Length: 305
Image (cartoon, rainbow, N blue to C red):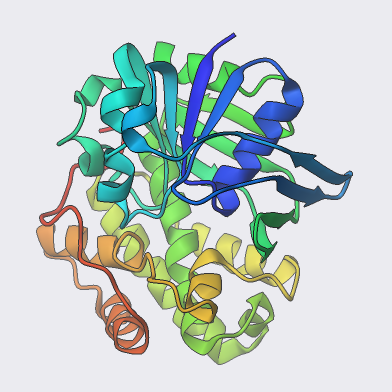
């Protein structure tokens, strides 16, 4: 049995907490400043509801084996205040966030070899406070190695498929390509069905192509076919699906645009690769929505690198 602390019980964090508690294999502590009486998750198999063991004061924790951070990528400072009491000498920090700069965000707070970047593919939406709906089975991917294998083992018995990959760089940039295209829905405030319009799909293709070019410069051997693979994924998915960037804009919350399309721009500049469509997307979304300060400042080393 491992002691696990989850920081940030939003859509992703709540899903992880519910699944880990359902499996009853580990002690799970949920870290949140506001009270959380119950977390409810709806899936195709029905609804599951748990009453999490809650920690509401960052300095009141005790060392655990694993700290899982599932806050938004821009809220690193808010997550970091919990680490001093939770991180013991042998603990690992798993970063379940968007983008490719997982390690760079937390390098100022913990030794780099204790940070495990995690690619999250869990399509889940908040439908009410502390109530979430998961549309299909979710997966987590981590770099291969002893920490990665130990992390994946935490999810045995859950409905989340956690696995290691020997090419985490490519996996991270593939996910970023998916996410950067989703900015179109956030800008238009339209669900995934908007990709059925040819003009919209072409804008998404342009965003993806720029991300692929930058990802290749970072060492990810991404195939040209990824463009249509992503477009077809959006077209074949639920037409009413709302991605997290879109959901945050609808709710008036700050956007993770810096960790997504902003990362394509930053790394593109480092490699002198033009990213004009991502530039336009970031400019428009920043003008339309509240954006928090950038946490990492300069371009960080990609996750797992």
